[in-house]
Length: 184
Image 1 (cartoon, rainbow, N blue to C red):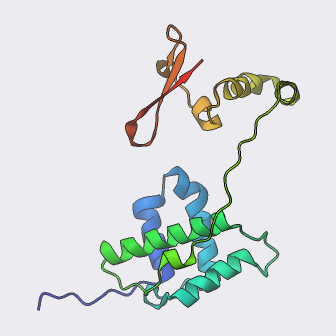
Image 2: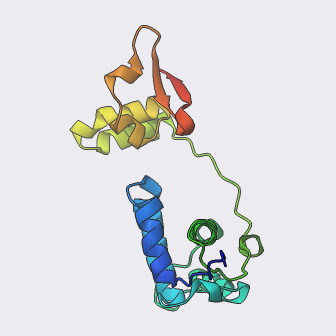
């Protein structure tokens, strides 16, 4: 009749498929989502059908993250929100791309208020102490980090084509291919 029956996926099947299609090979996928999916699978059960995810089940997940009974460190609001974002992305892809049936839970109901970010600055003395305590071959990388405010990954992956000594600038590409220029 031209109407496909809804597909049923377990949490484990959805995690594996999402990993292969989206997360594998990405820095966030490799670093965080892999861990998040394993933890969610342990809490919710890998055989749980996506169609059975309700607000009550997701609330149980958040509660298990916030107040673990397995000796783990309690997750803060920002961490819980990252888990919810990952689960939401997987459910959205399952529903919209794979045609799978997904339970009626809403991410917004479970999001927690996150504390304001804070800026921390080293004094010259603290910066000098950190540099002097470092292994000698790491000091140039740390010094460039301190002097430019660049992230470690940007400095470690820096290529000479990104450095313009005449203009005293480093130009990196941000997400979306936008250039980000940093004075030297």
